[in-house]
Image (cartoon, one colour):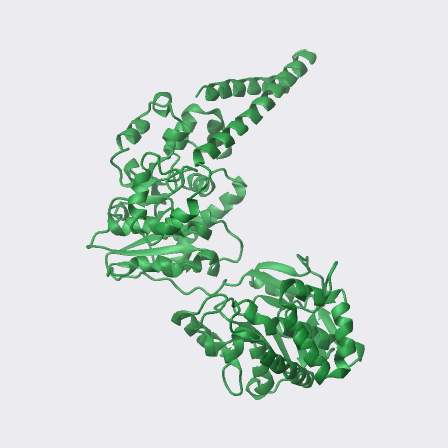
Length: 638
């Protein structure tokens, strides 16, 4: 049998991982209004250029591209219906979304909410779903229509589902138009709307003649309904009513085809990708040709105001003799606020700020605390870079830090004062660093929030992979990236003066630290309290939560002049005082363990005596519980 000619349009409205082949044809939905605001924001000039370079648009020939904000993917349906010749008149025409596809696998894949989920559209996903031209063609030859398998309701039907989620009057209008224009479809409409399943998402592949009849019927109803549904004063989401209604109309049409035996139909499992940005990254090159100081920040969710304050402090203390190339590694939530972060560079010829969407580079989930591990890969044209955490403010020109000689070490960093105190005074810290982290010299444990990174060495010696292997090895490290870096980099660290990373929290975590831990490092730390280059607000003690704390003013004097000031105040006003939260948390923590240890102490002492001292493990556990109880009593005395 001759292989049919197939074209499946894959709808995009923003840069996303491309699904592209002889069959899969990406199409830009709403290109005619691409620079207008949408529910996901407007495209900027660079994003529009990417779309134009990588896919066709729905704005050529006979089109309704300008109606995309209300008709959604129907602008692609209409374009294909009226411009089949531009697709070389295929035997089959189909549609999928940029993050939702049909699976052509012979085996059912594991499901979440009735469809298979994958983090990214990568080779593994393509293989599992058999999203290749050969598999698609093999499936098509046997059917007139291929659709997404029906979604089963547990206590609902399509009509009630629409009523519970949208304005039911809109759907009623469409149903009345259907009854008037196509009375032969009424019984199929009633059957569908009372059923316990639906055909959501407008995903399908049809023979071209069937697609033509479907579009003729669908747009006859949609265009008439458009005259009666005024979306002018609705939110961007509610203005898409006709797009939502089209999904139900498609369900009615499929019900009609089934009832009348008008087509041989195959229902396939659907698949969904969570990260639609993977593979869209462009190569990042230095922003300046000379005197370039690259600085990496990592930011997720609603933490961007604090990242902005850190950047503001850096700019305030920057030298006119250097160029500062700031790269903010962000998640998709922060992308929505990118213009506010970018505005910090306005008016400065030697300041560049770029937003790097981390999800464009990864095909597996990753926590934000590990974003900077990807710097060597994301920045292939950089040999060295600074990294700062967002909970810091900078009082010194960081070009001086950048010029530190790494001496072939992996990183330069300052020793962690909090862990130093913990190892000196706390049994848990001792055990964690010696036996869990397996460090040869725990006193060299460093803080990872201020780093000079040797990107070239990390790339050349493939140390980046060691970072991620160590995450697996440690399983759930208590101090995240810091533990990983210490384990991998031990013996390859250039130690910085503590002035470059003055930790905020030791006096609040361990009030008697100067007395309990009178070491050289602690003396250096105390000497730098009023004279340091970077204030790092470690642990849960944050100046926006505890403005009364010593050194909190270091944050607020930069925050007051940043465009995030009002938002920071608004986000934190009226909250429970953080001191109270911390005190309650630690009190409950210690009470729980005190009770448990008292029980263990008695239990293992009795078991040890009953065994006449022959079972050594009881003695060991009894001794351990006894030591821990003694330590807790000492801590309560604090």
